[in-house]
Length: 440
Image 1 (cartoon, helix red, strand yellow):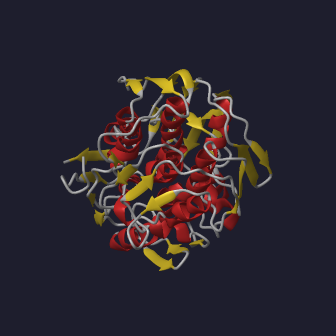
Image 2 (cartoon, rainbow, N blue to C red):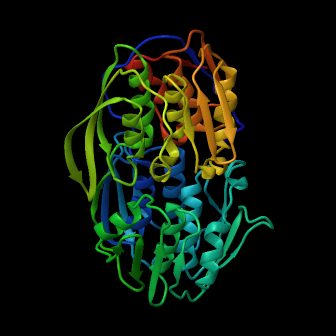
């Protein structure tokens, strides 16, 4: 569903609390990568818990259009991928449509650079504004030939047949997508490809490459692999997405009397910044039943209501919670004392400018929110309610839906169709747990 085809609206009545047990959909990052690596592996890969959001389905359809036989996804998120090997992809008949998915576009830029054929990748209106030079520039230094618009945005035309050389890249900005794109191109490059991270970022690509039997070296902030190996099919059980769980963590923390357990949550240490930040704010989060599934740590998270306090968010935690800030801003709006975020410029180039859009929404609801170039200052006020424009950003929409638990007036959220990109079934799950929400 394209961003403009419908104005799905959330209507949320004030009050309520969260109870019971929920399992949120599978992790988006891991779902994308399971399709990419499973397609390029030798043998048959079985995936369970696959996120059936539009973003991940774009990745799945891209590989199908390049000749990979993929069964599913079934209703319960099972996908079977008949891998074709690293050199088995075929030229697609048309463009690869990446929809709203920055992950697909950026990671595929690296993978497609190593193919023998040309491919053109397009995106929706939102993705077509997002910066791609952060991947196309280092890929070009490996020998990739990629055409973009003059300002470096999609559509991207990746020319096949390039001989890639491994590079040693010192990343100027901490970005898992850039790191992953270069490592995936490195599978096709001569010699060693290595990346130095200025701060830790998600390591799902490295973990999953190892899961498929590919040697990846991690030495502190230095990650490297040799080109020319092979991927061997494996089975992947996708953990629930902590970014999706974050809305429920915040909702249960702010709504008096709440006691909610969120099951099978991915607890990858490069992703748990939201838990650390909520705990610093005084949240009552209990981590239960810790286990490992397919190379990724998983646990259940029990959240009970607690009085939150405003904090200065440690900059070291920012890359570990980058997608959870819309939800954390809602927590800050109901905390005692001000919350200050710095070092988060990256939020301005997400699906929306998340700093500005969240600030506008908080202000519309009566909260004192001051955007800064690299963050925000939130002073809690009387959170009334009102009408929010989510700007088609799924995380903005879900954050304000949870805010209604503590609002004094109804909240109407416009432009919510893109919630399906990361969290199909959000309205039903939230309503079942105690949010007074309906969609129209």
